[in-house]
Image 1 (cartoon, one colour):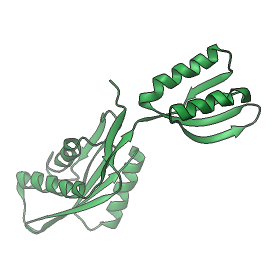
Image 2 (cartoon, rainbow, N blue to C red):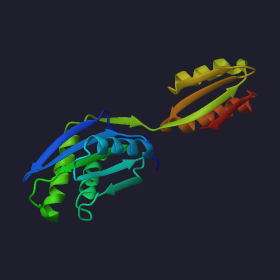
Image 3 (cartoon, one colour):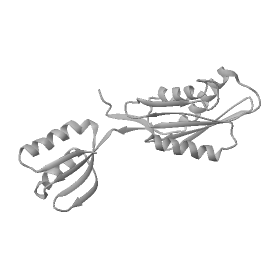
Image 4 (cartoon, one colour):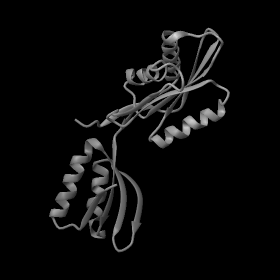
Amino acid sequence: MPAFSFRTIQNPAEGIYKEKGSKFLAFAFPVGSEGDIKARVESLKKEYFDARHHCFAWVLGPEKDRFRAFDDGEPNHSAGDPILGQIKSKDLTNVLIVVVRYFGGVKLGVGGLISAYREAAIAALNHAAIVEREVMEAYTLSYDFNATPQIMKLVKELDLIVGEQGFDERAIMKIQVSARNSESFSAQIKLLQDLGSRITLVED
């Protein structure tokens, strides 16, 4: 069954964890694409260029089916995986957590690293506001002007989010509909078409 909503964080958040001289700075971000993720990671690498490691994990999509964990030179699975585990444990998506490590001179061992990266991720998420978001689907509507009353009725009934609009020979409207209302929306558009309204619906 497709997801109609998902949990994510509202704003960027930070946390810190220290262990045997090593300092772990954690940064959590709401993200919407791999492009967002790359930009955030690159920005932190530039800002904290003198740090030894920039480890991270992310999850994307309402189904949480896109994710990655990156150890950045730490022993395999000792950094990215514990960070990813905290995102998953809170059932979050569209989230990136980067943990920047400054080495303190004492090796922590694999077990110590797993614990430190996990605690750093927890510290960042503890400062984040977790919110529920609706899964939205985007469409472009094209219709004759005489269908405007029916279209506006749908906008009100189904809480459609209206974006860019154009008025030439026909009306053009960019809209977003929540996934939970998508089936009803498509059915009502088809009904209007069957009744003779010249409406074209294209998924963006």
